[in-house]
Length: 453
Image: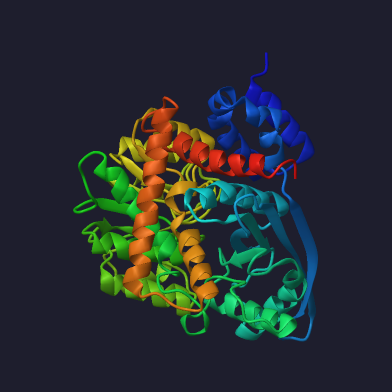
């Protein structure tokens, strides 16, 4: 006989065929919620689960633009406004060739619970395009962003839907999109977060996801009377999240030994210090080069190219105490998870969204290691986006220390909510259940209060 989860998922898959990442994200949440639905029958009666997996609105549009050779290019843009029960839609825009509706829906669905966990009044949404900013000139990126915003602007607003950056969307892209929004609406408002500091941005926003990921790891380690001091950490990715996670690990006395990108990864057993990190930041943020150049610059480091079709990623075979995945979804499979545990890793804090496959998550949970899922561990980015919205509404800016202090307190409160909720539902130490249930109940209660909408 099919379980309640399988029956529910059959309906979701039938309605949303070929959206594998979305199916994965929904199943992972629903598996945590059966005891909640048993305890709170009003959720079943109001069909909260059926409603929460259905976006309130999906917007798809074409994005025509002209490249530097004068040729017309056409990309697809989209925005999934998933749930506004506790506030305006909030979530990033991703520009990457892999972007499709299933990926944007998985990200938007995760965002509902992540945003609820921050304790801030923000709902869940996500958007993006299959445009690839890699290898494009600044003028090409500007023309694309202006065309993208020419359609998107009519669907967003400071009190409606507030996008931010994500993979492929940094300060440059946010600037171009904000300029076009202002031009079209004649409004200077907090409609995008991740803005430049001198025109409405918040201090600590670029650092927030990576810092928050590390603060969450530190909180998990505290439950065992430990800290990051002296710990060896493996970091994947080499973008914004990986860079600032590394910076915070160094500040807390830990050692980071790796970075990666889509071409391969480097391992530096001596540790990546502030000087080496500055090199990576220049390499990735300014020169937009490949991580292989790190090994050219620092010959004691080793570089290994990515093998397509490999059963596991050798990056996760590097001996470490703490793993900080900060690249992309499903980068840790079941073999990688087993390798991490076998080699002594006992704390995983996710900076990327859903970087571990379901089988990998099961390995972490069954091994009883400290495992912080992305919707809790990487919520620092959207938390500081929420703080940026507050500063924009009040027309003021807070100091670096104020914002960092608020971020630390938010990550501590998310950690506490996960721990307390997991315990209340009889799964002590299970951060997956804690995060899913705490985020769901806050959103579900707001949906009940607002009627069948």
